[in-house]
Image 1 (tube, one colour):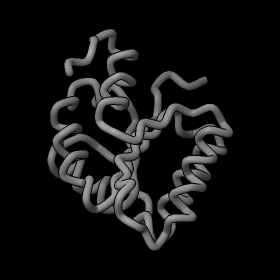
Image 2 (cartoon, helix red, strand yellow; image 1 turned 90 degrees about the horizontal axis):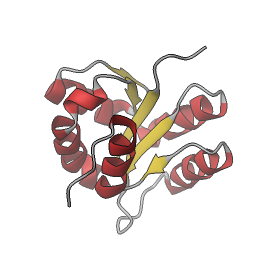
Image 3 (cartoon, one colour; image 1 turned 120 degrees about the vertical axis):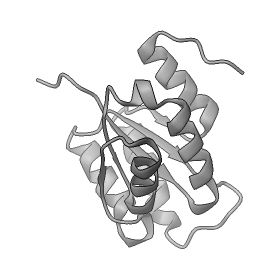
Length: 130
């Protein structure tokens, strides 16, 4: 039986700085989860926060698919995915597949900071500030 939730952290290149800042602002609540993420995002968040973040491959090299597989296996409970809706991604089919698999398996997926704040707030009982 799971006792600790696993949260996947993913961010497109133009959103990595935002993800790092969000993780720094939420370091204490994030420390209560098992964290994983796609290659560069996981490394940047781990380096910035000092939190342990399991690294999968970079998104374009299959990391999005690895995260999706873990969702399907029931090993990821929530996805925080700061994606860039204005930038075309060479691995766009993988991005859409990850979004689809999270919806299929009824896994919460935050695609922006505000939604991520609400997810963390719902779990910690802290109301997010605008």
